[in-house]
Length: 393
Image (cartoon, rainbow, N blue to C red; front, top):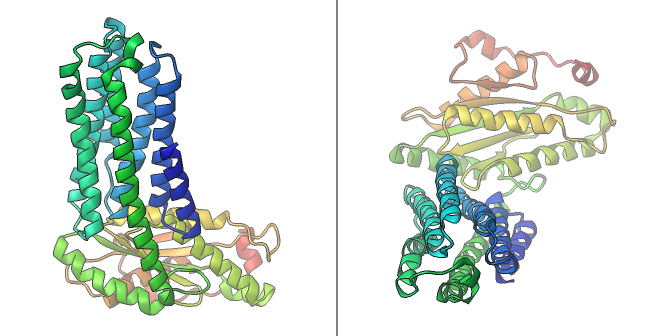
């Protein structure tokens, strides 16, 4: 019940504060953990599938939690390694279940697996340079989780030598695990709720720097942010990529359907960008229908894939004020900062790639790092065609 309450709390915070997806990830993690504990409590104690079923949900909950706390600070958890740890634990657990009725070895196997997973999460968090008090508290909580999983089962079983499967729920271990899970769940939830509220408060303070139509940063705020990110990326040796996007044939949208329809199209495009980017990325509306994304700690190819996902999502977006068969498109330019490069130079290269995307037919992504350096071609702007002809093509 406690885990489900915290899960609902994170979902409410995510919806009410329009928070990034890692907050929703916290809620999913607590919900999965609650399901795992319910299975442990209500399934027959001697059922051969009990440990397998609970491990699936506990592992999924742990993966969601660790991936979310890492994404919050701009780091990526290596989910492939988590999957390998799970498979090793599951196979070893299957052997333990088949060859012994003693629950003790099963507890050590599964808890060691979770301990390794949380240790991997802590290691990933330590690679981030983000270090305020809340970040340190999150690292400490995750480290406590890892230490508990690695140490507690062995210590408990020193006092209770063997635990038959049918007597599991009457054991000292089962009484202890309920208390430990309550303490760990509450401490983790309170720290993460505090971090989420701090992010929400910061977002409210920054509301004056937001574009009213899209909720993204306005031009001044975006440029101020990326000018600070560029030297930081140079100092820390991290890649910083810039994505520049422009809605195709936007003038015709305003001419054919009116400025209200155009505003709704801009708002829809901004909403897609806001959902696609990570918490550590910076996105803004820098012109009428022009947008920018500064992807932190993001190599060139992942930035290109991000642009492609946004492009594809926008082509599928329905626009209430347009004809039902009309779908709008957008063009993208991608560039990754070079050593010592200024914002003006980085933007110019991404913008040149954007114009190349438009000249090559629109509704596409062009990458400045792979494009030929043909200045005359980049300087020539494409002639606009009728919107209906573009849609039919």
